[in-house]
Amino acid sequence: MSFSNEPVVNVANATIFQDHATVLSEIDFQITKGEFVYLVGRTGSGKSSLLKTLYGDLPLRLGDITVVGHGIRDIKSSEIPFLRRKIGIIFQAFELFYDRSVAENLFFVMKATGWKDKAKMKSRLAEVLMRVGLGAVSSKMPHQLSGGEQQRVVIARALINEPQILFADEPTGNLDPEVSEGIMKLFLEINKSGTAVVMATHNHHFIEQFPARVLKCENGKIKDSSKEEFELTGIY
Image 1: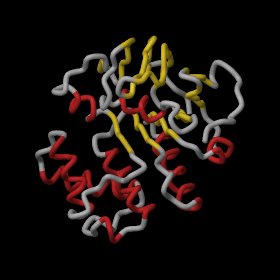
Image 2 (image 1 turned 90 degrees about the vertical axis):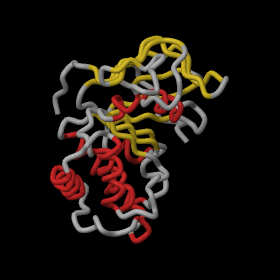
Image 3 (image 1 turned 135 degrees about the horizontal axis):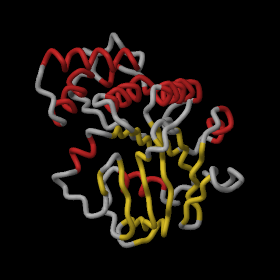
Image 4 (image 1 turned 30 degrees about the vertical axis):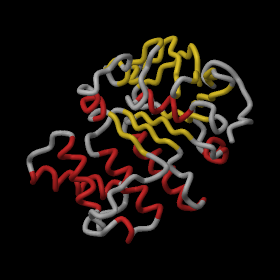
């Protein structure tokens, strides 16, 4: 699909810390509206720390980052919910409430992000569950679903507020290959509708089968396949 030149993420001379350790230094890149980007690198190379910084879970101390119009450096805790309404976050560990039904999990997010009209909430719930292929599971408990179905619930939760960008941290890491491919195709469908996707992955097969731009965390830097050629070795 064609992209606009409007960046939904702009990273300028940023240094990423985990606790007191520097994991990535002086990094620069942009992600434009509707773009699909793989984030790769060895375990401990900075992928998760970068994602956490982008969605406001880790403080940015050096450099500048803007995500969907929000400056991340020194962002106030009171401003983070407004950022989160414009983005979607998907974890490898599903992080669902296992004592609540699928519907209750999604309603929790809606209420936390300002939804009040119950009729609109029910309509949106049905819409996002249909979109991820789970139209008949709203009353089920998470433990009644397979791992792949639980991850689809997490994706539905991330789509509630029609985000401009999805950040997915190893979303298929706990799933078998066949289920993983179904989840990957779902991300591609979401991306085709205009939502940017940044997916951290170790799955070399995905990158070969579904080529897209790659950002590689290596030796404390970010290498960008749109600017330089590099081998996809060392991503495990």
